[in-house]
Image: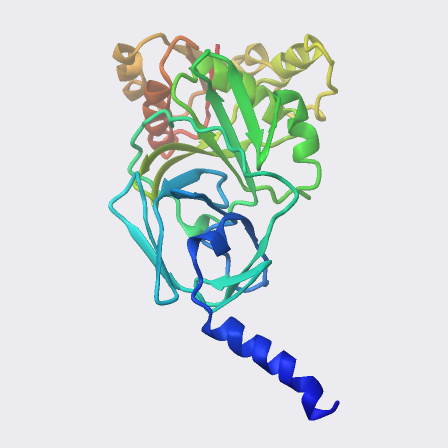
Amino acid sequence: MKLRNLIPIIAALLFASCKEITKEDLKGDWIAVPNGCDEPLFDGINFKENGVELFGSDSFKETGGFQIRNGVIKIPLDRDDLTFETEIQHWEEDTLVIFDSLIYHRNREITHFDFEEYELIGIGTEAYLSKANDFNYVMHYYRTADNLIKVRLGDKATTLDEIPLFLANGNGNRRIVVYIGKGITLNDLKNLYYRLASVQQLRITLGTKRDGFSSTHIFADIIEIWWDDLVSHLEKLPTPQPPPPPPTDFTSKESYLTEMGEEVEIFAKDDFRKIEDIATGKKYVVSISSNLSVENYIGLKKLVVRKRKLNNQIITEIK
Protein backbone atom coordinates (compact mmCIF):
# COMPACT_ATOMS: atom_id res chain seq x y z
CA MET A 1 0.00 0.00 0.00
CA LYS A 2 1.37 3.43 -0.94
CA LEU A 3 2.28 5.84 1.83
CA ARG A 4 -0.29 8.41 0.71
CA ASN A 5 -3.01 5.73 1.14
CA LEU A 6 -1.90 5.13 4.73
CA ILE A 7 -2.13 8.78 5.72
CA PRO A 8 -5.96 8.85 6.20
CA ILE A 9 -5.83 5.64 8.25
CA ILE A 10 -3.04 6.93 10.48
CA ALA A 11 -4.87 10.21 10.93
CA ALA A 12 -8.06 8.40 11.93
CA LEU A 13 -6.20 6.30 14.48
CA LEU A 14 -4.50 9.36 15.95
CA PHE A 15 -7.83 11.15 16.16
CA ALA A 16 -9.44 8.18 17.94
CA SER A 17 -6.58 7.92 20.42
CA CYS A 18 -6.69 11.64 21.22
CA LYS A 19 -10.46 12.06 21.33
CA GLU A 20 -11.83 12.72 24.80
CA ILE A 21 -14.52 10.11 25.46
CA THR A 22 -17.78 11.60 26.72
CA LYS A 23 -20.92 10.31 28.40
CA GLU A 24 -22.68 10.56 25.06
CA ASP A 25 -20.14 8.14 23.56
CA LEU A 26 -20.95 5.50 26.18
CA LYS A 27 -24.71 5.96 26.29
CA GLY A 28 -26.59 2.70 25.66
CA ASP A 29 -26.45 -0.99 26.54
CA TRP A 30 -23.20 -2.95 26.63
CA ILE A 31 -22.78 -6.72 27.01
CA ALA A 32 -19.64 -8.43 28.29
CA VAL A 33 -17.83 -10.77 25.90
CA PRO A 34 -16.75 -14.00 27.69
CA ASN A 35 -13.02 -14.61 27.37
CA GLY A 36 -12.83 -17.99 29.10
CA CYS A 37 -10.57 -16.66 31.86
CA ASP A 38 -11.86 -13.72 33.87
CA GLU A 39 -15.53 -13.67 34.83
CA PRO A 40 -16.88 -10.14 34.37
CA LEU A 41 -18.07 -8.34 37.45
CA PHE A 42 -21.01 -7.12 35.38
CA ASP A 43 -22.54 -9.02 32.48
CA GLY A 44 -24.28 -5.91 31.25
CA ILE A 45 -23.95 -2.15 31.64
CA ASN A 46 -26.52 0.46 30.63
CA PHE A 47 -25.14 3.99 30.52
CA LYS A 48 -27.99 6.51 30.65
CA GLU A 49 -28.29 10.28 30.55
CA ASN A 50 -28.18 10.72 34.32
CA GLY A 51 -26.83 7.45 35.64
CA VAL A 52 -25.83 3.86 35.01
CA GLU A 53 -27.39 0.43 35.53
CA LEU A 54 -25.11 -2.54 36.25
CA PHE A 55 -26.28 -6.13 35.80
CA GLY A 56 -24.37 -8.93 37.53
CA SER A 57 -24.30 -12.65 36.72
CA ASP A 58 -26.91 -13.13 39.47
CA SER A 59 -29.36 -10.98 37.44
CA PHE A 60 -29.58 -8.27 40.08
CA LYS A 61 -29.49 -4.66 39.02
CA GLU A 62 -27.34 -2.03 40.70
CA THR A 63 -27.75 1.67 39.93
CA GLY A 64 -25.50 4.64 40.37
CA GLY A 65 -24.13 7.77 38.83
CA PHE A 66 -21.08 7.94 36.61
CA GLN A 67 -18.45 10.45 35.62
CA ILE A 68 -15.71 10.37 33.00
CA ARG A 69 -12.50 12.27 33.51
CA ASN A 70 -9.13 11.82 31.83
CA GLY A 71 -10.19 8.48 30.37
CA VAL A 72 -11.37 7.07 33.70
CA ILE A 73 -14.96 6.07 34.54
CA LYS A 74 -16.02 6.54 38.17
CA ILE A 75 -19.27 4.86 39.30
CA PRO A 76 -20.57 5.51 42.85
CA LEU A 77 -23.39 3.07 43.67
CA ASP A 78 -26.73 4.33 44.97
CA ARG A 79 -27.32 1.41 47.35
CA ASP A 80 -23.90 0.96 48.84
CA ASP A 81 -20.96 3.00 50.06
CA LEU A 82 -18.92 1.72 47.15
CA THR A 83 -17.42 3.35 44.07
CA PHE A 84 -16.07 1.51 41.04
CA GLU A 85 -13.28 3.12 39.09
CA THR A 86 -11.92 1.83 35.79
CA GLU A 87 -9.70 3.11 33.02
CA ILE A 88 -11.13 3.13 29.51
CA GLN A 89 -8.47 1.07 27.77
CA HIS A 90 -10.16 1.22 24.40
CA TRP A 91 -13.33 2.64 22.89
CA GLU A 92 -14.92 2.41 19.47
CA GLU A 93 -18.52 2.90 18.44
CA ASP A 94 -19.40 -0.71 19.31
CA THR A 95 -16.51 -1.83 21.55
CA LEU A 96 -15.52 -0.82 25.07
CA VAL A 97 -12.55 -2.26 26.99
CA ILE A 98 -12.63 -1.59 30.75
CA PHE A 99 -12.11 -3.41 34.08
CA ASP A 100 -8.61 -4.72 33.28
CA SER A 101 -9.07 -5.68 29.63
CA LEU A 102 -12.66 -6.96 29.74
CA ILE A 103 -14.39 -6.40 26.41
CA TYR A 104 -17.95 -5.10 26.13
CA HIS A 105 -19.89 -4.90 22.87
CA ARG A 106 -22.72 -2.50 22.29
CA ASN A 107 -26.09 -4.24 22.44
CA ARG A 108 -28.41 -2.91 19.76
CA GLU A 109 -30.95 -5.73 19.94
CA ILE A 110 -32.97 -4.34 22.85
CA THR A 111 -33.61 -0.90 24.28
CA HIS A 112 -32.32 -1.83 27.73
CA PHE A 113 -32.08 -4.69 30.17
CA ASP A 114 -35.36 -5.22 32.02
CA PHE A 115 -34.79 -7.02 35.31
CA GLU A 116 -37.74 -6.31 37.58
CA GLU A 117 -36.44 -5.08 40.91
CA TYR A 118 -37.58 -6.63 44.17
CA GLU A 119 -36.43 -6.85 47.77
CA LEU A 120 -34.97 -10.06 49.16
CA ILE A 121 -36.74 -11.69 52.08
CA GLY A 122 -34.12 -10.26 54.44
CA ILE A 123 -33.07 -13.32 56.48
CA GLY A 124 -29.54 -13.29 57.87
CA THR A 125 -27.95 -16.75 57.85
CA GLU A 126 -24.30 -16.27 58.90
CA ALA A 127 -23.25 -17.96 55.64
CA TYR A 128 -22.30 -15.95 52.57
CA LEU A 129 -22.19 -16.36 48.82
CA SER A 130 -18.71 -16.47 47.32
CA LYS A 131 -17.10 -17.29 44.00
CA ALA A 132 -16.19 -20.68 45.45
CA ASN A 133 -19.89 -21.63 45.30
CA ASP A 134 -19.68 -21.65 41.49
CA PHE A 135 -23.41 -21.82 40.72
CA ASN A 136 -24.33 -22.61 37.13
CA TYR A 137 -28.06 -21.85 37.48
CA VAL A 138 -29.60 -18.68 38.93
CA MET A 139 -33.29 -18.35 39.79
CA HIS A 140 -35.36 -15.55 41.30
CA TYR A 141 -38.61 -16.27 43.15
CA TYR A 142 -40.49 -13.25 44.48
CA ARG A 143 -43.78 -11.40 44.85
CA THR A 144 -44.63 -8.12 43.17
CA ALA A 145 -46.29 -5.10 44.78
CA ASP A 146 -49.57 -6.59 43.51
CA ASN A 147 -48.78 -9.81 45.43
CA LEU A 148 -48.22 -11.83 42.27
CA ILE A 149 -45.59 -14.57 42.36
CA LYS A 150 -42.90 -14.12 39.73
CA VAL A 151 -40.21 -16.52 38.57
CA ARG A 152 -37.07 -15.51 36.73
CA LEU A 153 -34.81 -18.23 35.38
CA GLY A 154 -31.49 -16.59 34.57
CA ASP A 155 -32.52 -13.43 32.74
CA LYS A 156 -35.87 -14.78 31.52
CA ALA A 157 -39.17 -13.99 33.24
CA THR A 158 -41.25 -17.16 33.17
CA THR A 159 -43.27 -19.57 35.35
CA LEU A 160 -42.71 -22.63 37.52
CA ASP A 161 -43.82 -24.75 34.56
CA GLU A 162 -40.58 -23.90 32.75
CA ILE A 163 -38.26 -25.21 35.47
CA PRO A 164 -37.86 -28.76 34.02
CA LEU A 165 -36.87 -27.32 30.63
CA PHE A 166 -34.56 -24.76 32.26
CA LEU A 167 -32.71 -27.53 34.11
CA ALA A 168 -32.83 -30.08 31.29
CA ASN A 169 -29.15 -29.80 30.37
CA GLY A 170 -27.68 -30.03 33.85
CA ASN A 171 -26.15 -33.48 33.35
CA GLY A 172 -26.52 -34.27 37.04
CA ASN A 173 -24.15 -31.48 38.05
CA ARG A 174 -26.58 -28.65 38.64
CA ARG A 175 -25.59 -26.10 41.26
CA ILE A 176 -28.54 -23.79 41.78
CA VAL A 177 -29.01 -20.62 43.78
CA VAL A 178 -32.57 -19.35 44.23
CA TYR A 179 -33.01 -15.77 45.42
CA ILE A 180 -36.11 -15.54 47.62
CA GLY A 181 -38.04 -12.29 47.66
CA LYS A 182 -39.89 -10.53 50.45
CA GLY A 183 -43.42 -11.89 50.84
CA ILE A 184 -42.61 -15.45 49.77
CA THR A 185 -44.22 -17.88 52.24
CA LEU A 186 -43.19 -21.37 53.23
CA ASN A 187 -46.10 -22.70 51.20
CA ASP A 188 -44.75 -20.81 48.17
CA LEU A 189 -41.35 -22.36 48.80
CA LYS A 190 -42.95 -25.80 49.04
CA ASN A 191 -44.53 -25.33 45.59
CA LEU A 192 -41.13 -24.42 44.17
CA TYR A 193 -39.56 -27.44 45.86
CA TYR A 194 -42.11 -29.76 44.22
CA ARG A 195 -41.02 -28.53 40.79
CA LEU A 196 -37.34 -28.96 41.62
CA ALA A 197 -37.93 -32.43 43.06
CA SER A 198 -39.73 -33.42 39.86
CA VAL A 199 -36.37 -33.24 38.05
CA GLN A 200 -34.48 -34.77 41.01
CA GLN A 201 -32.92 -31.47 42.05
CA LEU A 202 -32.83 -32.02 45.80
CA ARG A 203 -29.96 -29.74 46.80
CA ILE A 204 -30.59 -26.04 46.62
CA THR A 205 -29.05 -22.83 47.92
CA LEU A 206 -31.35 -20.00 48.92
CA GLY A 207 -30.21 -16.38 48.63
CA THR A 208 -31.98 -14.51 51.41
CA LYS A 209 -30.36 -11.13 52.10
CA ARG A 210 -27.87 -8.71 50.57
CA ASP A 211 -25.55 -6.61 52.71
CA GLY A 212 -24.28 -4.06 50.25
CA PHE A 213 -22.98 -5.03 46.83
CA SER A 214 -20.78 -8.00 47.60
CA SER A 215 -22.26 -9.83 50.63
CA THR A 216 -25.24 -12.15 50.08
CA HIS A 217 -26.59 -14.36 52.86
CA ILE A 218 -27.34 -17.94 51.76
CA PHE A 219 -28.79 -21.13 53.18
CA ALA A 220 -28.01 -24.57 51.74
CA ASP A 221 -31.15 -26.69 51.93
CA ILE A 222 -32.03 -30.29 51.10
CA ILE A 223 -35.47 -30.85 49.58
CA GLU A 224 -37.33 -33.74 51.21
CA ILE A 225 -40.63 -34.73 49.63
CA TRP A 226 -42.25 -38.15 49.75
CA TRP A 227 -42.46 -39.71 46.30
CA ASP A 228 -46.17 -40.52 46.71
CA ASP A 229 -46.89 -36.87 47.57
CA LEU A 230 -44.82 -35.70 44.60
CA VAL A 231 -46.76 -37.95 42.21
CA SER A 232 -50.06 -36.62 43.55
CA HIS A 233 -48.92 -33.00 43.23
CA LEU A 234 -47.65 -33.39 39.66
CA GLU A 235 -50.86 -35.11 38.57
CA LYS A 236 -52.93 -32.14 39.75
CA LEU A 237 -51.00 -29.51 37.81
CA PRO A 238 -52.80 -27.78 34.91
CA THR A 239 -50.26 -29.53 32.69
CA PRO A 240 -49.56 -32.87 34.43
CA GLN A 241 -45.90 -33.75 34.67
CA PRO A 242 -44.35 -37.24 34.91
CA PRO A 243 -42.59 -37.98 38.22
CA PRO A 244 -39.00 -39.16 38.53
CA PRO A 245 -38.33 -42.85 39.22
CA PRO A 246 -39.42 -43.95 42.72
CA PRO A 247 -36.82 -44.47 45.44
CA THR A 248 -35.79 -48.00 46.27
CA ASP A 249 -36.70 -47.79 49.97
CA PHE A 250 -39.60 -45.61 51.15
CA THR A 251 -42.17 -43.75 49.06
CA SER A 252 -44.40 -42.40 51.84
CA LYS A 253 -44.34 -41.22 55.43
CA GLU A 254 -46.45 -44.19 56.48
CA SER A 255 -43.98 -46.71 55.09
CA TYR A 256 -41.05 -44.90 56.70
CA LEU A 257 -42.67 -44.78 60.14
CA THR A 258 -43.26 -48.53 60.33
CA GLU A 259 -41.19 -50.35 62.93
CA MET A 260 -41.88 -47.89 65.76
CA GLY A 261 -40.99 -44.66 63.96
CA GLU A 262 -42.24 -41.36 65.39
CA GLU A 263 -43.64 -38.16 63.92
CA VAL A 264 -42.62 -34.82 65.42
CA GLU A 265 -45.01 -32.01 64.50
CA ILE A 266 -43.80 -28.42 64.34
CA PHE A 267 -46.53 -25.78 64.25
CA ALA A 268 -44.69 -22.80 65.75
CA LYS A 269 -41.26 -21.74 66.97
CA ASP A 270 -42.15 -22.90 70.49
CA ASP A 271 -42.18 -26.47 69.12
CA PHE A 272 -38.49 -26.32 68.20
CA ARG A 273 -37.64 -27.75 71.65
CA LYS A 274 -39.05 -31.06 70.41
CA ILE A 275 -35.97 -31.44 68.21
CA GLU A 276 -33.78 -31.62 71.31
CA ASP A 277 -35.86 -34.55 72.57
CA ILE A 278 -35.14 -36.69 69.50
CA ALA A 279 -33.32 -39.83 70.57
CA THR A 280 -30.67 -41.79 68.71
CA GLY A 281 -31.30 -45.13 67.05
CA LYS A 282 -34.90 -44.38 66.05
CA LYS A 283 -36.66 -43.12 62.93
CA TYR A 284 -38.30 -39.69 62.98
CA VAL A 285 -40.30 -37.57 60.57
CA VAL A 286 -40.26 -33.88 61.43
CA SER A 287 -43.52 -32.52 59.97
CA ILE A 288 -43.26 -28.76 59.47
CA SER A 289 -46.41 -26.68 59.17
CA SER A 290 -46.48 -24.58 56.00
CA ASN A 291 -47.79 -21.74 58.20
CA LEU A 292 -44.31 -21.37 59.68
CA SER A 293 -42.36 -18.38 58.38
CA VAL A 294 -39.48 -18.99 55.99
CA GLU A 295 -37.14 -17.51 58.61
CA ASN A 296 -38.32 -19.99 61.25
CA TYR A 297 -38.14 -22.82 58.70
CA ILE A 298 -34.47 -22.05 58.06
CA GLY A 299 -33.81 -21.90 61.81
CA LEU A 300 -35.53 -25.25 62.29
CA LYS A 301 -33.62 -26.93 59.46
CA LYS A 302 -30.36 -25.78 61.06
CA LEU A 303 -31.39 -27.53 64.29
CA VAL A 304 -32.26 -30.69 62.37
CA VAL A 305 -28.89 -30.67 60.58
CA ARG A 306 -27.10 -30.54 63.93
CA LYS A 307 -29.30 -33.29 65.35
CA ARG A 308 -28.58 -35.53 62.36
CA LYS A 309 -24.97 -35.76 63.49
CA LEU A 310 -26.31 -37.96 66.30
CA ASN A 311 -29.23 -39.56 64.44
CA ASN A 312 -29.19 -39.79 60.64
CA GLN A 313 -32.67 -41.32 60.50
CA ILE A 314 -34.46 -37.96 60.61
CA ILE A 315 -36.50 -36.89 57.58
CA THR A 316 -38.34 -33.58 57.30
CA GLU A 317 -41.46 -32.65 55.35
CA ILE A 318 -43.44 -29.46 54.80
CA LYS A 319 -47.12 -30.20 55.41
